[in-house]
Amino acid sequence: MFSTSKKVLVVAATVMSMGSLVQADGGAAYAAGGCGGCHGATGKSAISMYPHLSGQNAAYTVKQLKDFQSGARKDPTMNAMAAMVVGKEQAIADWLAKQ
Ligand code: HEC
Image (tube, rainbow, N blue to C red; front, top):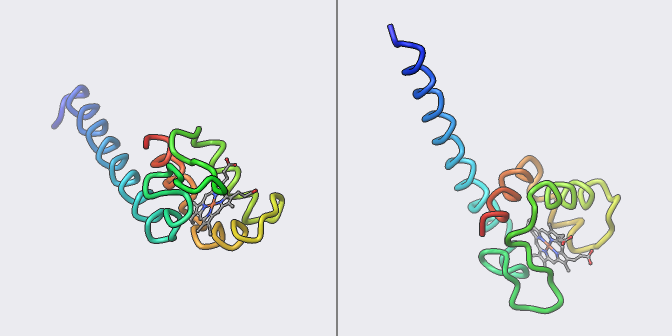
């Protein structure tokens, strides 16, 4: 039997490793989605037409992606691009917030 403190440690370690998996998934989904072509490999856009995404608050980024998906925010390019990362919004946003 584990003592309570050991159980807490095991749970904490599991949550931490899940967190880093989500991070890796977010970066991979961003790369696979072709987002870096416009927004830069780590969300720092080299092209003035396109916004920087790095360091942005994750909740804001998630909302923008969902609004592009629903059509509440209209931009022909991003309406199409956001549709390619359905279900990955949070992972991408968390990853971008840390770049
Ligand atoms: C072909 C270029 C292009 C690609 C590829 C692209 N974007 Fe964008 N993105 C834009 C443009 C242009 C805007 C600004 C849209 C507007 O004016 O509303 C934008 C805006 C955004 C915003 C809102 C930023 C803000 O500050 O409100 C987010 C978030 C975003 N893109 C994420 C992504 C993600 C994630 C991907 C990959 C799935 C992606 N973009 C792929 C061109 C692109």
